[in-house]
Length: 113
Length: 112
Image (cartoon, rainbow over all chains, first blue to last red; front, side, top):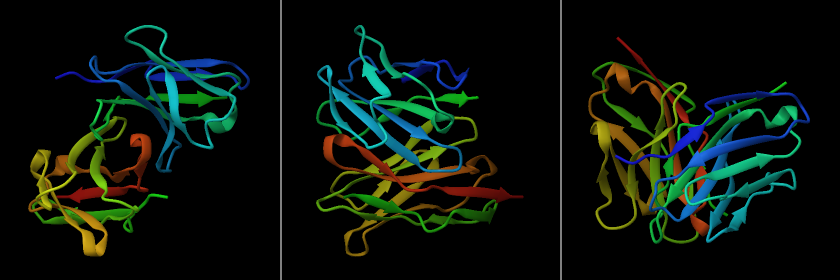
């Protein structure tokens, strides 16, 4: 069964450094998403992406965040200058046109020191 | 704006006992509703979903959920819990641009 994959599974970085989290969505999916889950809190929507542009973003998704689909398979989330409060589990998800169902990857745990 | 409330943060049940996890939603139109499960250190696995039609939906691992529009609820049930069901369960609603709004989650502990 096809699944969403994410790399790395765990990323440790110093405050102020740039990180790129990578996702490979399910191959025929056209909608892509990033969510995050701070430890002990609910999963929060960050951004949705369709047709090579952002469809919707939350107030969390400020200028420090960006997303890109650099090729036909990868979908990335970049944090330009990480802060301690960016420490969280980041989930990528993908979905098909016309379906509300999203399929989630296993997540990348980001730890900012 | 859409929202989801899961009133029970932690629930403990004995193995073999029945389970019901509560979920209430707020959404202006007909909702798309989901239950996801997250085992420790794992990602979010889709258990079941409701879009329309029969208000009782069946999912994987023996779970089912019932949509009640009058109560704005989508409670998850299982007749007999197994130790492997210990996990965190998230109710979710999908709204504009397919943005998923999650509840806070309910942690299920199963005791022998």
